[in-house]
Image (cartoon, rainbow, N blue to C red; front, top):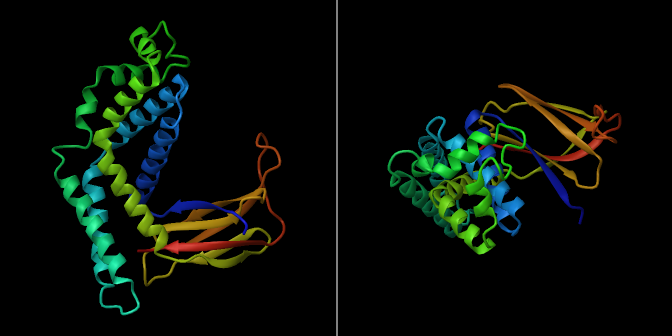
Length: 256
């Protein structure tokens, strides 16, 4: 079976924020799997970026609102006979658990980390090219030379206040992605356009392509319609060109 690569386009700012958070959570998890000091630095960079995101706007409130919206929609499916009611009940319970955990957080998410002296020092130096050299932050350099187990323990401690948000964002995006089956479509001459369905609000457009194709989609979405241009790139240093042949792909307009 051919492996597919997914390309996603959020339709509103809330989903855009959740996708960015997911990207940073994945970055943190990936670098935590490795023991080098360079991976530790990348994991810290992910934490700092996450803190920057949660400090802007009310991420906690927006996450709770989205969980409540999804839960309300899922409860309306309970009367449908062909639905897996056991799995549906577990999903609704998981959403309620995330909502309760978010409500239990006093103030903003990860507020305690905003006063972390080392993280703030690193954050200030990140805007300077090469600003994390040993002579810039000797305390940080010393800590990076500690055994991996020591660094890992500290990173897990710093990430702890973000774990509830991580679980909530993963749950939200999984529900959205699984709400709609992808259907086969064809982009004639590398271009596809479609009107949004007025009966339901699309949250996320997903384009799935075989991983071995040397093309990728450029998705533009408005309130009433969206378009997809498939581009080919032989050299990443050069401007991509639109694919001239028809492109077969799978499309999902996720709306739950």
